[in-house]
Each structure stands twice: as structure tokens, then as C-alpha cells.
Amino acid sequence: MLNTIARESAKLLILATSGKIFSVQFIKKDGTQRDMVCRLNVQKHLKGGKSTTAHVPNLITVFEMDGSDEPKYRCINADTLISLKVDGNQFAVID
Image (cartoon, rainbow, N blue to C red; front, side, top):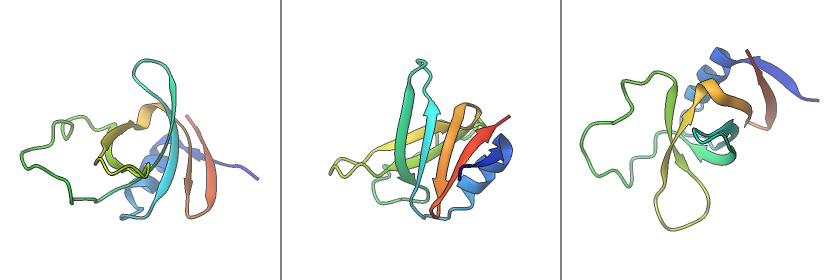
């Protein structure tokens, strides 16, 4: 059964994962759909400096867990979330 979750609650749920792996589905800036397995709070491959997205409240910076050796930090736009899966629970994001 697919649960529904409000967009703001979905963003808070992602931020509350505290480093646990989760998956999201969202619409990228170019209009294409993207599926991603990721986590928060990864600091291993940081190069220093300030965040370039900290001033944009709807963007969540995550570390993509795609199995490659190349570190991949990505941003998820909370305003375009379609669905997410956290702790085995699948949610469809609604406005």
C-alpha cells in the first residue's frame, strides 16, 4: 500500500533520516524524472568552502549512493518530489 505525505512533511522526513539511506523520485530542472538512492551527512569527499545552495531553502544536498567510486553530491528539489522511500515505507508526495 502506498502512503501519501505532504510536500513539507516529506522534506522534514528526508532531513530526519540522519545519514540513513533513502530513495527519492523527483523532477529535475530540465523536466526529466530522476530516481536516486542517497543519504545525508556524508562528509568524506568534501573539498571545503561554503555551500553554494545553503541560501535556497527548497534544495536538499545529498550524497548519491550509485555504487561508483566517484563521489557524487547532488541536490534534490523538494518542490518537485514525486515519491520517497524511507525505512522501507513508500510515500507518494502530494501538495
